[in-house]
Image (tube, rainbow, N blue to C red; front, side):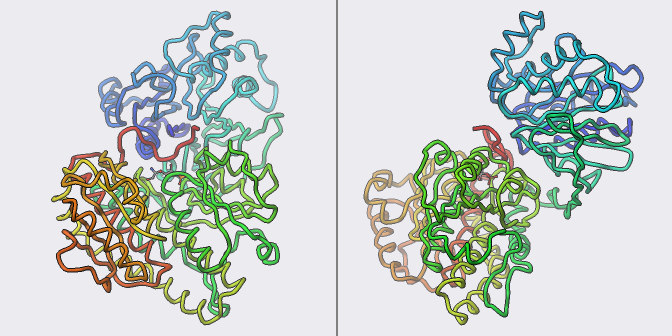
Length: 623
Ligand code: M6R
């Protein structure tokens, strides 16, 4: 949550790089946006902050800055409000009351009140309700006490370092000091910050999408690291001022991947990208000889893995739903008991765990703080951990013992779509891998590999229902409540369908195992509450059909997402969306596609901003 960008390089580009950069980070928060620029001629700062989207800020900049305005450096921010209301005054960047320091922050400063009291006694003043403003003033306080450095870090960078010795909480920051127009300082702990290394320019950003238009070369900063950048280079150091040798990564996607490419919304683009993202999740990960899946980065040997007699999966939101599907798949095919827990609950629950438990975390961004802290808690207790994540170089990717990258490409829409299906597919491959280490035969493994390889084509085929789903969405967009119902591995898909609809259309929706309906939720069923059933032609199909009858008997509408060989009595469902009949390992993944399209089109009918739903942010880096 919150996105920050910093730039030092070509003076003519500073403003546009920053505005474009935070536009790409807008999915991290869109309550307000702001920019601070050190004007090239005067080296005086211009700070512009506006409630609302980056477009508001961009218009305000056009009005406020004269033609040909250039800046020697600058920082920008897009906010997801935590402390302080959504106002221009609370928007970042914040400036110290002596005017020297300007700062953009992502994270939460937990001890801001005591710092504020201390600084007030030193005559620093405050003009916002945020926790962040104390950072600008505390850096200014240390700066005025700090002697000029003779070598190594500048006085400016040292004062930033000293500040963070007194700060509790999380932060990724980009800082300007008006006495040092040639540079910016960045630092991180608990919130992401990357360094982009271009030709005659350096950038700081919360994630790669903000720098990818300028450079593919990035350094993922670690917690506790501080970086000082100029247009000619950078210097990274840790808490004790020791210089760090950076590892420069080359990002393997480009600006086109982070754009809408002709689609109306990122969410729609990402739904339609699924054949490709799923192909990427599988690439090079099957062993035909052994009829199994293979993973390069698990960092656990087979004998250790064989000894695991329990798996605990931790995640939040949509990734938690993926974990629930994976639980079904691993238990069914590999016969290993799996538990799934909300990462945020696990951290504080002090759950007793068996010795031979493998702890897996799932996170698209790799930065979700609840999941990261759960991972840390599991590591602290000595468990072997692994992650499924799309966030290359993310905090979770770096801190787990091993893992599997999703390679889904950037997911910009706040509502997760392609990341979910790729997590489910990787989970299915992992289930196959574990099963083949245990009791699954070569023959069965071979046929599952063949089925999994069909996934991209099957998803492509399912996407062809889009027009029909759009028409259904038109008929149902004004209903106030929805139930989503499925059984077994389709139950988490019902949960995910309900979450997607809630998130982007603000319609109240609940997901349940279909059989649970009669234990309470059936009270909601009426003409105004349609039920979306997801059903397969399996041994419990008839039970689900009976639940549909119960809904119909109470005047409820039925939307049925079914595999093509289901035998649902004619006329029972008001709407039918048909999917190809597939192997049961793939059924949950495929059933997700119509859910995504249904919620997307309902949200469009209701005129909702699907890519930036109210109150949400893509990467939740606060607890
Ligand atoms: O980046 P993560 O997968 O860790 O994010 C977890 C959740 O915050 C995320 O899935 C959230 O629920 C999305 N809004 C779902 O669409």
